[in-house]
Length: 311
Ligand SMILES: Cc1cc2nc3c(=O)[nH]c(=O)nc-3n(C[C@H](O)[C@H](O)[C@H](O)COP(=O)(O)OP(=O)(O)OC[C@H]3O[C@@H](n4cnc5c(N)ncnc54)[C@H](O)[C@@H]3O)c2cc1C
Image 1 (cartoon, rainbow, N blue to C red):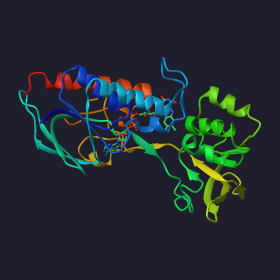
Image 2 (image 1 turned 45 degrees about the vertical axis):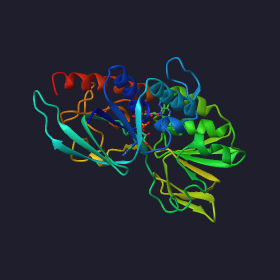
Image 3 (image 1 turned 30 degrees about the vertical axis):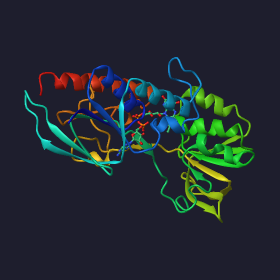
Image 4 (image 1 turned 135 degrees about the vertical axis):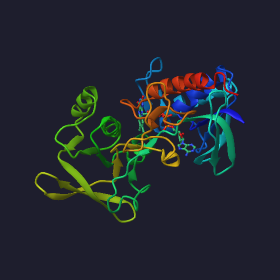
């Protein structure tokens, strides 16, 4: 029986692992991917984490994991598919939960959900067919394949604009297709984007189809104001239209909002006693590495408070 099972080893889960180890808790981290780090791993450069300006995302994820390993954190591989309540807790007794994975089951008194989030898909014709053959969700991972070629980025937030800026360094031309007439991205990113001579923004437009033979050759773009449709010839489409939480295995167990984010305040306590949530899967204003790491620390503090006086 564990004191704590942490689901996910992104920044939130790894921060929780460090705090749990230092608190002397018997904790286990379960991760579905072979490498820890979560979304950070697919980030080319992180420039807003205090003390580590310009760090490569993969290096950052590796550093986070090494820190947890150095303190002796325990890890297990597996996809968590659900959580069963074995027994409800009481004032003097901790609940018992069973975390079910495709590799085995683990009994625990408390759980931190740190399963993070994943990219949204466009859901248009050709997207799935050409994924990996020109359609990508990670410019920093796949951008190098399109050096001196044309790329389209779809989206208008920070990630889309960062992707366009990054791609413009190597591609001959980058189109940014955005459904509105203004971007949501931070002003500093917009200014940088606008200064690039090989970037063109296609405003008020959506992508309706991805075209290709054995790889992407173009995207069908529709102007939502005029209904004009045109084909933009491109070698790649980078989709950057937001994320959704990976909380399906916990549906019905804890309260979530309409998008599936687990409802919890700064103390990270979910609606279910003994279950806490940290990082991008929590309903909150800002989903970043620094807020995920902070959640991991807060969640473990709440776990400690919860376990005081319970067997
Ligand atoms: C392209 C990109 C660029 C970004 N750039 C920045 C940036 O510059 N600065 C910044 O601060 N933030 C950036 N972010 C956001 C930042 O990466 C996230 O806010 C942060 O990683 C969230 O951490 P997390 O631990 O909550 O979730 P995640 O990083 O999503 O990690 C969750 C982990 O849980 C695992 N998991 C999920 N479901 C299960 C399951 N059922 N069973 C077992 N394991 C599971 C996943 O495999 C993953 O390892 C960026 C994100 C992306 C995608």
